[in-house]
Image (cartoon, rainbow, N blue to C red; front, side):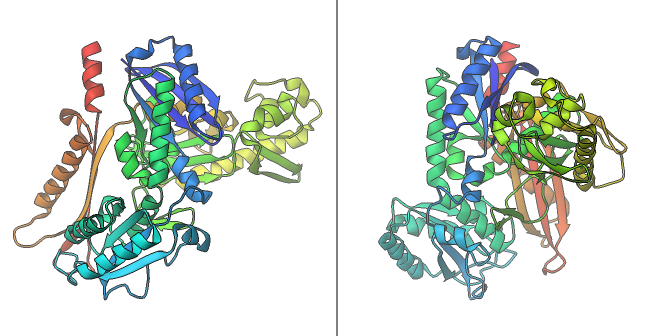
Length: 524
């Protein structure tokens, strides 16, 4: 059986076919405005290039920027009723208080605060006001709102009030989609609430997108199930994406980093993914992207769901090179996917970083003779500037003075030098489609992030064991094969500002998709 990985980027839609750990074929197709036809084209091209029987495709894994782009571009977002359970606490900071005005206006600014909530140890802060929930439900009906987000203080410790609120809302509004914050974010009320609201605003788009991907596979005659990659480098089934579209945010850089680890066999490294417009930079830890430990800004909104610690700079294969050798600027403007029409080396009229790479001998594409009019001083200055930009972002990603390899992936990675300071740069085979490889090899994860009170016989070891058991159960429920599970993150943090010897424990496990693992064993 074969795995197909597809990654939809802003410039290209990449696709690969894997048999076991062997990459049989990898292609790049142009990303289309509707995304779906680009996925269909990429699928057709990679099946043709590999020569495989499409009936033997076991699964298709897709990474997409669809939902991130919707938030950044302020498109396809629905109004949301944001219900917070916590009064009298938190009255001074209503839902969406720190959101940018434009996105708050689109999502509707329908914020409600209700009595409820818990202390850190699960004790009731204030009883839930069920009558007020029913009044809010009537208002939701009157406004025609189709999605709600419910956030309760310390719902990660006790979720009973969130569950009861959802039950009441759906009794009163049977067609209402309800998102619970305990399923989306980690501890931290405002950021968790924002993540839940954002997720609720994307539910209708998620349903359309999942249907469109399914239609693209059907058109291509592929009957295998498909999965969507999420931002921790693991997979979600189609129905999970319908419920939790925000978990796909930043899955593109994550796929590239997982692909880089797979193609090189390295578990600890810095990865630079150079695309047509930007370069994404992050660090690998145990073969997975290092996770951000602070709140993450998405389109101006602070959220706290899991996200890779990745940052971007405006440097890619289509970046514009402007000015004189003494006053040179590179990026952030880019010709993007039009690089093969507009770059000098392809007969265009725009000087890009791709032209500089060809002029310095780092790349052999297009017609080098078309660059004869470039001054050697300009080429030299541009190459030095590009190297400085890469060195600065790699140093930013380092967390220690220990030398670690730098893995260069992405179609634009021909821009990178062979060494950055004291660090070796590795460019693996199939580097240009590492993101699609990362999608194809994605595993299934389970994760728990809870606060435990280490009293009354609860020890640190027993709390860690309970958290690990929860994470394993989640992974198995998501389709992971139990015997392949391994713990890749385990941390506990004493919370000195809370009474009762409180400790926050976070455990994450990953494993192989059960059905795929069994098929590969049968076909070995």
